[in-house]
Length: 343
Picture (cartoon, rainbow, N blue to C red):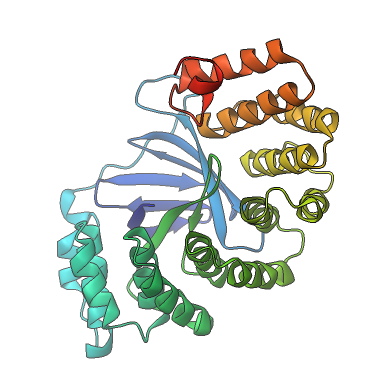
């Protein structure tokens, strides 16, 4: 999990300059679909409708490989970046000073100091949001539940202080094999954080309650369906009723994005759990047809599941071929080395 803070300055409709601690980037495009050009290359951002969340894919990096762009990031002076000086220039009321000081500490990667300040401002939803996710990152799970629950209870105020002080903040949250979403100060983001904490604590009932709350907001949300499926399979992988439920959640999912591919992975796991390896193989084959924008972790997870499916079908040679491909990328992945007889 990683935090990112920046100042966002709108200079024209659909055109935004983002000033961070390390420099500047230029974002172009309508809400929900952005192309960002910066020192780390070109990044495409796709919003998840109705959630306030998004995921990104890197189109090119410093190596020069991949698509290029005619656009370049603006050059800004170090004094214009998001740094300690920016926060020191802010004048905050006494009740909000701890929030500003907490953000300043986190920008300087002082988690302990930042968390101490944010605890003192946890009556503000944005401070509770940050305190909750910092606590989750530090594996202080009971504290994470306390602060994220406060943020959820005061959801109508989420984003108010960030907006007031001209600071944007997101954090990267892994929700399934090879799938990371970027969470901002929204109720949906807070609930996803709570789900992660409850899963860590194996408090399945509370995690499911949060997912049901998200489903009521948007029953067709791909992220919620993926999170729900991952939770159910992790909690009770051998329960045939759970497998049927995951298949229903997945529905006729198609390979449209990394999120959809991950949901196909859990659908395949559920089909294998119901002793339907042929159907599972078909789902995985479709999921693996597209590799662009898919992380190595996600692709390895899909290949590993297909190896298990081939094994269930008695196709030992194909199963081994899949395992060898995984081993070539990551020799420590799951029990691949053991299955190949290398350990």
